[in-house]
Each structure stands twice: as structure tokens, then as C-alpha cells.
Length: 568
Image (cartoon, rainbow, N blue to C red):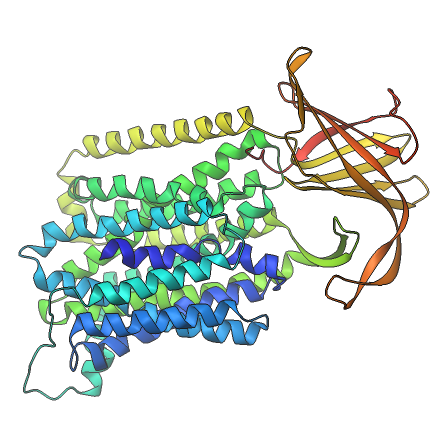
């Protein structure tokens, strides 16, 4: 159950930003779309309290919601207008989000010892998220509408599977539910405890910078040249599975405050890693991998620890309401405010510019200042971390921890950090070993500045002369691997492709669909030659007009400056 439950969410959530960017949605619309899950999280506790827990069997409610969610996912992906897309995405999340607490509730009711057994069931949720990432990347749906069709298929399958789950009828009671019961207002009594109040406020504030990771990482990875976005992001879930297993040791030997602060510190480190790696060469790709790997400690030590802390501090009669209130404050209100902050920051650190496409058409694209975005989130995380460290003081907990010697816990953490470093550098080495010439390159030719954006299937080269004249050379690449010369140099690859040279003067032409589009003016056509030497990462480029021959010495040397290396 947990496996399929989290596959549904993981199939689209990590790569939504990359898909929306490809569709042409703006930098502010992407985080607003992500806010749909936060809005649904604020609604779902009330839905569960009003309907699921009182009138219908849990498994049947989950089945109906899963079928409805499948339909709304398909309707969402069919929309090109943002308002309609957001509306149907919101309806999908409103159907999906209540199934998370319902799945937990169903598990608790059928387990003999939920405290010990549930973590081993919940870990299948992380495995489901990992499976979702592999499915999306294997199908090459990281930036396409296919992610929503697969989501709909699994959601419908979940609807069928729920009907096979153990019957879980609502709890019968003679007491009529009051508005206070439905809204879970009894949990507000916990706020009289200063430590709980500080924890709740700290959790709410921490979710604001955390939102940057969930909203922006997929888009950031796509712009960093990583093609298998969903699969790459599952690294965090693999690490998360390991931390689930060591959580009891952490609590016993470090105490709740140190565990929470470690989780918050990991968010600072991961956001800083992304900021440092933005706009650099592939030699710093390990920082991107490290930032993703830190998800395991960051998520478990903060969110899971928080749930355990609230369960420990709340009286038994209101524990469910207390968990619902924490759910509302973090995944609901915290992520919603966070999405609004992300939208505002994106608007400040992005700009819309016109760029030429491989077919010569002029398109408006959004450019992000990723350094500014990630460092803003990291600084915000530091401020919240310091405020929480100073304000949260649970004296009872601290006295219990002071009597222990937590060397084993610190040792386990140190070992895992070493493993994460080894993983990050290992993946970077493997990526560079199998690198292609794809990426951003720059060079000079007779005083002219040249920039080349090379992907797995196209090249867009911009040449700016000293007098300011700009020309573009674009082409479609059928085989980025090109021709290998094993007898001369097995690391040398020659890639040839047809090239069209354009001026920066605009003209209006009819596109394939018959509609008028803006295009650059064609100057001439010919053939492009990319000579890529893999072992020392050197690339030369030469354009040969039609009717002329290749002349040695006329090539321009390009230097890899931005974007991580891409796999073959």
C-alpha cells in the first residue's frame, strides 16, 4: 500500500518544475503550481475529520479519491492555460493528500504494535518514491506530459488495490461531532507549553526555505544539464531509507533538540551546495549530488523527529489532533507561504530573454540566477536555525541526554557523511568518464566572442563581433557521439551536422502548424564540424559553407565553462 501510495506523488512532484518550464510557464507560476499540495494539506485534515473518520470505511474513501485523482491528473496535463492547469492540479492534490493520513490510520488500526512495526511499513513509501524516479527517467518523461499519464495510471491502480485492503469501518460513537472536534482545536492547548510553541513556530518557519528544494531542484537539475532528473533525485530517498533505520539510536543518545538542529543544519548545507555549484563546471557536480544526498538526514531528522516529539508531548486523547495540526503547520501553511516566497524570489532573480532555437525561431525563455536563489534560501535557513537553537530549550530532555555519552551516534553520522562524500565524488567521476561534448562552451575567433549551447540533439552558437554584429549558427545533431577514430585516437569523436547561419534581424514566417512565428533571417547554410577529444575535454568547431571544403586552421577552440557533464 505505502509503495504505490508514494509512487503516485513521486511520479510528478520532483520534475513538475522542469515540465512547466518546457511548456513555457513563467518563473512565478511554477512555485504557485507547487502550492497546490500545500493547499491540499491544509484542507485534508478537516476532510478526514469530517468524512473519513466518521461515515465511511477508510479503504473505500481511499479508493474513490484515487479514481478521482487519476481523472484530474489527465485533465491537468491537457491544459495550456495556467489557471486551468492549476485548477485541475489542485483538484488532483486535494484528492491525493487525504490518502496519506488515511493510509497511516489504516495501518495503525491493523498493526499489533504500531510504534515498532510502522517504521518498517513507512519505509516502503521511500522505496515507492525511488521507483517513481526510475520509472520517469527510464521512460524519458522528466520534462514531458507523460509523467501525468503515468501518475493517472498508478492512481487508478491504487483505486482498485484499495478495495482489497482490510475492511476498516469508521469508529462508532454516540457522541455527536462538534466543530471543535472536526477542526482539531483541542491541539491548540499544546501551544501553552513554551517548548511546543517554539517547536511549532520553528517548524513553520523552517518549511519556508525547505520549499525552495522541493519547488526548484527539478528545474535546477534540468538547467544544469542533468537529463535523468527524477532518477538523480532518488539519491536522497536511498539515504533516507538508511536514516530511518538509525533513528532510534539518534533519539536515544542525542536527544530531540540535537536531532532537530542536525536536520535543520542539513537544509542549510544542501542549499549552500546548490548555490556554490550553480554556473560552474562539471568538477563541482559532486556538490549537487551531496546536496541531494543530504535529503535523508534533513528530512528524517526534521520531519520524522518532529512527529515523534509531538506524539511524545501530546496527551493520548489529542495525539491525532496534534499530528494533524503539525501537518497543517508544516506541509500545509509552511509550504504554502514558502511557495509564495519562492515565487517572489524567482521574480527577483530571473529575467525573460529572447533566444534563438535550433530551427531559427525566436523564443522567449526565462533565465534564472541560481546563485542568488539558492544563497537567499540558505541565508534564510541560517537565521531560522540560530533562532530555533536559542529559543528551544526542553530542560527535561536536555538533562536526560546530558547523562549519556553519545559517541556511538556521532560515529554513525560520521560514517554516513563519509559514504555520502564517496558517493558524490564517485558519481561525478563516472559522469565525467562517460561525458559528451554537450554543455555550454565559450571561445574567441579574431576578436569575436563565441558562446555555444550544445545539447544531445542540437547546437546553438552565438558569435558577437567587436562592432556588435551578432550572428547565430544552429543545427540539429542526429548523433552526439559522432564518428570515433580508434586507430588515431580512441578518445577523439568527430560530430558533423547541417548548420544554418542567421542574423539577429527578425522576420515573420509560417510554422509547421500554419501559424505565424518570429524567426531570425537566414544568411547561409553549410556543415558544422565538432572535434571532441574526451580524455582532455577539448572541443573545436568549424563551419564550412555549402560548396566549400574543410580547411585546417580555421576552427575555433571552445572552452567548457558552465553546466555539468552529460551522460551519453
